[in-house]
Image 1 (cartoon, rainbow, N blue to C red):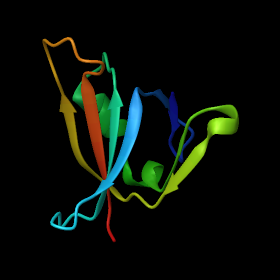
Image 2 (image 1 turned 90 degrees about the vertical axis):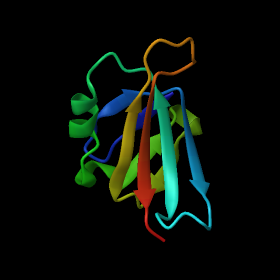
Image 3 (image 1 turned 120 degrees about the horizontal axis):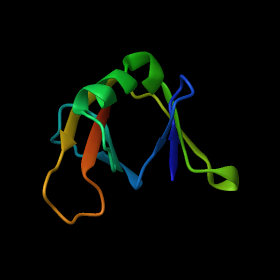
Image 4 (image 1 turned 30 degrees about the horizontal axis):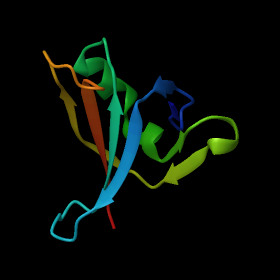
Length: 95
């Protein structure tokens, strides 16, 4: 699956999950799961605030636009596992 940032950068992702928990004061979260061979700093540089304002997920007729994310909450990289993905980027949309 493709994730396209507002600045045109395209990233291959495993899946994207949007969630909201009323007890979470951060607002709505978007978890992006991917496999990344690079360092966390490379992802940090990709997910800058200006690139987050509008995201598109999917390709062709299956494209979904996801607007309104304003900041990165966390970037987590997992090592030494057999999981489907090794990196999670969590974005925040304040509600």
